[in-house]
Amino acid sequence: MELDFISCLAPTHYFDRQFNCDAVKILPGEYFVTQRELVIVTVLGSCVSVCLRDRANGIGGMNHFMLPGNHDGGLSPISASARYGVYAMELLINHLLKLGARRSDFEAKVFGGGSVLRGMTANNVGERNAEFVREYLATENIQIAAQDLLDIYPRKVYYFPNTGRVLVKKLKSQHNTTVLDREMEYSMRIKRVPVAGEIDLF
Image (tube, rainbow, N blue to C red; front, side, top):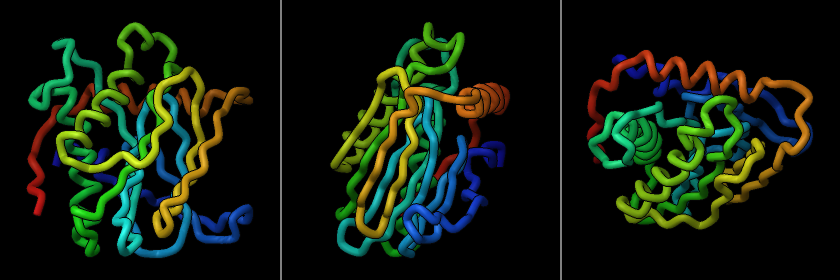
């Protein structure tokens, strides 16, 4: 499938000594779902993450994605740009359903969409990502239980799917450009790959 770089289950697992539990780190274009008690960690600039869980049984997960630049000026569901976000959301939802989550019990917490990418503020990348997430979840009747979107700072997000707990840290002083470099590289990658394939929700 031509969008395999978006369908990547996060490969980075480690033990987090701060929280004394197993942890999974997700990068741009990755996602992770679980039934276990662990923490999912990501750092967001212009990208957005949706933390999605079944409130009743604690099955949950997180994605990390960005809409590629488009020239239609809108976020209609059929636009090439929005289809990347739809694809990333459907991957997350489908995997949760396969693990036994119930769509009627979903709650979402959404983060990111900051204006942090050099040279991309004119395209309102973060703002478009935030707008897409809100519109998508509203269309799918998935409640947003918490959100921290837009602003000018990157964020580090810790998500505990089993309980729904989220910790967000604004990175107001950065010692390196790792976050921006990852998102710029990811942005270039998604612009080069055509959208293809559909996912059926069940």
